[in-house]
Length: 426
Ligand code: URA
Image (cartoon, rainbow, N blue to C red; front, top):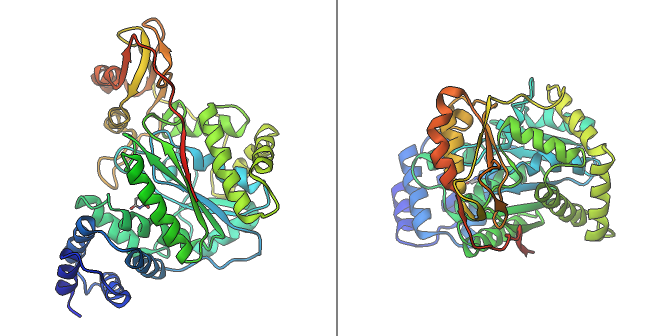
């Protein structure tokens, strides 16, 4: 087979066979398919798409480029994955919460790049917290703590690791088949029994419209099931941030509030919903309502917080109370009225520019940078009450005041609040 011919075949919109996809990905891992060829292939896939059979084949080959966790017990293994959104700290609550319900949660997570933060970066705000475990060590963690949140090391879908790095710099991230194969190749490596996807829709997400998000959800569900992993999805709103906290340390603090039975309602409710779906997927005899009630009780009783402390300690960290944040200052709206729209992109860009996110892979992050947003769409604001509190170093913060004020569009006409869960895709 000739690499250039296979790229041209996809460029012309033809379907590749399993063997052809295997040839490309194996060659990429061995070095016989060059980075520039794989980048051209990724662009051809972006423009021409892939059939479900091709996407399933790509997922399998990328998954098999690494190892899979060797289960040490019959305890059901569940996980949730989000396509990423501003203020999304659900994983940090969900993993320890589900660990209190007699399931294992082996969570392989990602770093922030672009505007949305990454779970691993947030967790690394906790002193000593480590995310780099190989799959064998991670299995030992799971036996001891029932949950872990780790990075995809060299043993987990290495083809995805290299391909994602190319996609990130060649404008080829936004492709349903490539996103599907990327997410599922890593999730399949964790040997799960059920996966729940949180597919975000809106200005702060990859998928800007509900139709695009539905297509991605369908692809993840179909390809996940074809690989033997029962997968379901919620489409959830990302036209405004989730919760109040946006950043790294600040989101850990908010996640802990939820784990202790408090915190913002949207974060708690979405965590409960996604966790309940995961529980019901592996427990035929439990209804969604029963699962929701159990999960609420685990949050209220402090059990979920204890599981978080256990997970943090097992991964080398120590939790001694809320993490400290950079110097704070308040921002006020220019007019009183009702919030019409929140520009997630502008808020995400401000966090990155203030040092709380990465412009390029490998950039250092200031974990103490963050924003607490007091406004939500449909809510009333007035010029005497802050709409957000910014935590950042004093030299840089004043540059962003105007942009942040403009990110919250206020007018005098009342508007309705936004639903958080837009659809359930089974
Ligand atoms: N998350 C991933 O792991 N891969 C993608 O391609 C997009 C989001």
